Length: 296
Image 1 (cartoon, rainbow, N blue to C red):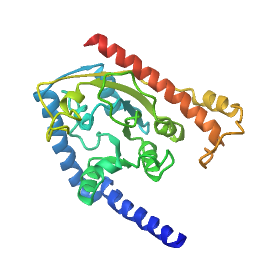
Image 2: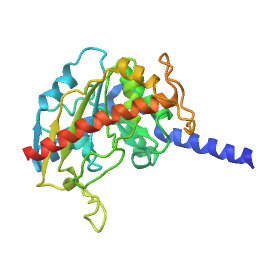
Image 3: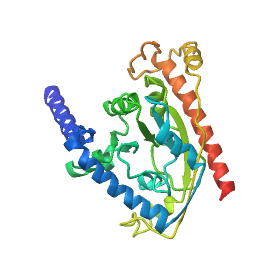
Image 4: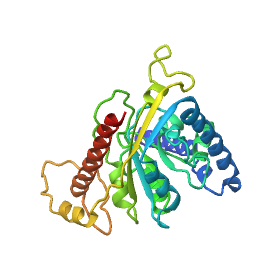
């Protein structure tokens, strides 16, 4: 029975891996033509909804534009934002003046595998759109997180929704998942971490407005507000040193995380470090949220 269960699990994992079609996300796939077509088409729709059909106000847009187009070579960019709807990305990049249709400059984004990678067709399109599938509940050391780490290792731009799920009520920024912090720590070159907070997309794509479901297309004549902060800086050497001195809890039940090399941080130290960094990002995002409320 155990062998049959193991075989079934292996088959399920293989099927899931086949659905994610990682090869379709490579820049050289068919000469890059399918990626360019998909990103141009999605970008045009995002431009239409954000710049024409709705009213979008962006504060401190130059901070994002500068880092997307001219940051130091080899330096990755990691943007983080709150999550108000299934259309936050790509619509949040559709504001006037942003090069959303440029496939080379475009972001990679972490997406829920159970929503965006349901079948081969969806997987192919989302892969062409530079999406990285994340299996919710599989932890911060799942294979797809390693794929996200490769994006940062290449000096590219990655976007994350560290709250982990959609919330359409206007409440304070929720406790962040540790995946984003783990990527910052594990990246060979520390990424520039840029916080973004927005509101209005919950009206463009409300979760329960069309017979209790999302509308078939995004809505229009809504007001969208976006505020872009300044890079969040971390003194990683000092944080890692502090993490090493965290007292060990004998009742602590580990999940078998690998030690971070060459730092050699054990799981307890990593948990302290990721929580500390996540708290800082959450605090910065909450400050931005309050500032956005004052500006509206």
